[in-house]
Length: 488
Image (cartoon, rainbow, N blue to C red):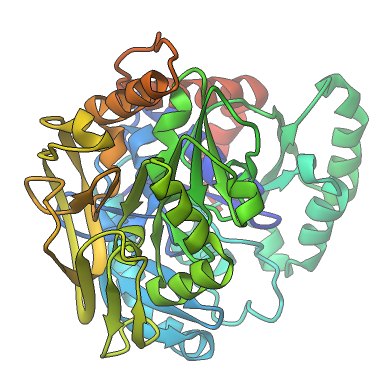
């Protein structure tokens, strides 16, 4: 059975996912077989495994960092919010239905046997399991029946490293306050602290390290600088969503209230001179070079928001001006004539779409989840530049879409002039696809494209190495290995 180590954070976006990914990479570099594990994840960014299971995107990213194939074993429970008080519940990679938060809280203990079976099976396959917690481990009103933070650490008998985010301020309150709220048996499981996202001269924090160790009674294993690497982030607090700077080529992404899988657009930021902005208003939208309407977990409610915000009209005006628009998954559904949810798979009801494509979508109870690939077959408009390009990706959607518009792909989708859409997440990751789009955008503005085909996988591997190097240089890895060997 594998040894385990658990990474908990003082709050959401403290850097747990990235620190866990860094450890996965370091252990892999050091010759160990390792895998990530998160018993319960709440995220709208998800990933489809090779066998068709749905997991949080962070665990897929961490598996890539570890050099192992993503598996539903790594994230046995995934919650995808559909409303402010309810989520779709996915267990072992498959949806089991929608639940309100109160109902899930009452019933989550029923999932412990399945969580532990996933953990057991994963442990039999690897040397080290890097477990990630969620949010803060000391939300006192939620601690009863915890299955993701200290509750999981106890089940897995995993020593804990507590990570705090100094970039957001209050690092002493974060770490010392969290330690003070642990019960004694929980406190005994915490083996060290990590100060994350430090900017400036780390030597200036020497006294801070002493204060944390004296008052917290736990060793500071390292002070990690703010590492500048481009790693996919599933968190809605991601700084990528706040990007405002415009490049020579300006790609605007509609920031839907229930936006999902925004990592689909990360590849464009690899190209010099290209910016990706997430916009929530007509003023922010302005006149970009290309618009992308991304996925969403609540298509009908986000279609209402798009209409009420004025962005539907603004996007249509851009279409009339010749600006290309690409819709993915829920964005593709919105670009059609009508979206209907007769069985209440999301929020129920029917709404007219943007009528940019001649297609209509009806939601049912079955969720389509699959890896897929093929070629573009569009022959006209802006996206004719993609004709023949090869793509691969995955589908995660509830609706069935019927279209009388010309097919965008040999597996479906649709296009009309400079407007197109499809269900494929990760479709831009293919160098043939992203490079052709960027090149065409440069040409449309009379600019010379000096870039080249970008190997997305090679780029990501380099980013994992940058992350691992930064963490390895900043923390006491000998001590971390000792913590793993000694356990709790």
